[in-house]
Image (cartoon, helix red, strand yellow):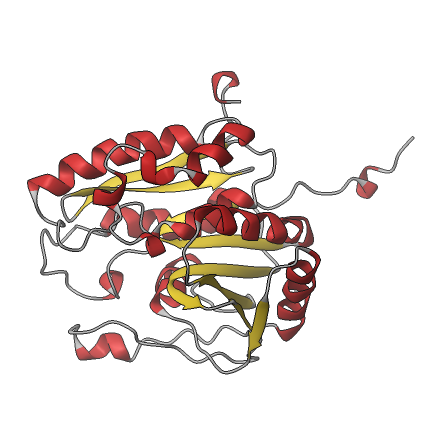
Length: 285
């Protein structure tokens, strides 16, 4: 009889989250209803309990970091980049002293090299707000090593799906793969009736694409620009591409929309691939 302790644990999920607007969770919000970000904040706070497993490390792909080649953080103690503007002074004093992990950075380099993805290591750049703002809610003790991986500045969807596929083995090595962006990111349209319509149309398509069978999902996400209202929802796609990375890391796992809300007049959503919360019903498999 096999020893049950020899059974490998299931891989951690890969998850795409909305990271809100700047330091929105840590201030009195004045650009709309005061509770604009409350439901997203609660979703992020409940994240550890929802996944039910403490990650050994976290890899974050943020919509606020791009490089000509993929850049991998190898700083031991990454500083913070307060890359938002016009917010209250105290939001520039937020701290998130999570350690980096040069060893994990090198492991990511190995995986990227195997996939023939050009990359470089960066031992100086700090965490941008797409990393530290949501993690302050998700893992406030800042005691889990975090490595940030950039987007590539040509913003190709197929490439970022390939990037996720290259990172996928990390899910079986105790690493949470976290994409941090927004499923709707048209800054000129927020708080308008147009945003409500555009984001709803695009969210319907995006949910269908993420919940499709893996081979269909890849094709749909590769061709995302052909989706209804696609370029109205994302005039520039840097906040959508972290989703491509998490979907690429999904392998054969089916995706699910695990959070949806209205914020600043637009529909925003989170998507998870792999085990996340209650097991899906038979009609979701």
